[in-house]
Length: 390
Image (cartoon, rainbow, N blue to C red; front, side, top):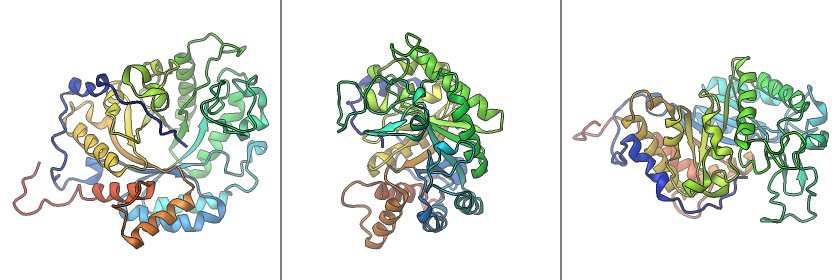
């Protein structure tokens, strides 16, 4: 789960808007009856893949709730929740089967929803006291094997242990990782893959015999390029989270939404056809402009705050409308993130609709999702009588 601790945004980040000549005056203005695909090409949801016993309910949810709200992109965080045959030692024995996945593929195909699987690579190879499947099977890939997992996890801690990373320069790591990527992409019949790569706190550690002392930005960019090149060779596109490509010090975004360990310079070293998922949960930080200025396609990702999500939506619409023609298409759209399991989110969405309280009460991913997509689906309406088209 993304950490929501964030420092106050400093002026230099907001001043990026001046560089593009973008004003936020469009917020609240009615849009003309353009195609929703033209106004907002990506309208997505990112959520943990359902467990096998949840698949049928999730298929129903896709058909009833996602398709009817014009969702056209679904990122499923699979990780090791699949019965891999290429690397069975890293498979979850009770994970999704091929038959389960095909049900998801079919409902998405029927409803014209682009289905993108995710396996978190580089970082997030552990969670608190639990080691992930990759490092369980291959402890030799651990970037920081000298750091002992505490019996009781807490943050902050003296070792700076949030989640472990694998060493990107270990000579066998990609022999283990890339077959998993290929297998999950094949079974999902997809043309894109999300590699995660967020919140990488351990990279280029001094004690690592392979990457110690090397430039952390070059290490991060090297991993991105290796994954991108592998996917491109099979006609697939790489997506990843954008936080490691932002300067946490200069921007004031801090160590969670951005990088304080120098990986941010990788933004100038990675291929330009990578899609950046730019997540900000507590405010509408305008960093999508930064990524677009770097030549990268970007989607903005909210979580639980409906007001923030709607501000982010109108920012993206404004950027697409007011930016120079070359830069406009780089602002791809919105992807709502969910950090509970699929079953909980489905129940919350149905519950909010049943009680009709999704515009009040505490901030939740379900309430944010419902309000965001309600706003999205007003964009391509015909203007009311007397209302001037923009």
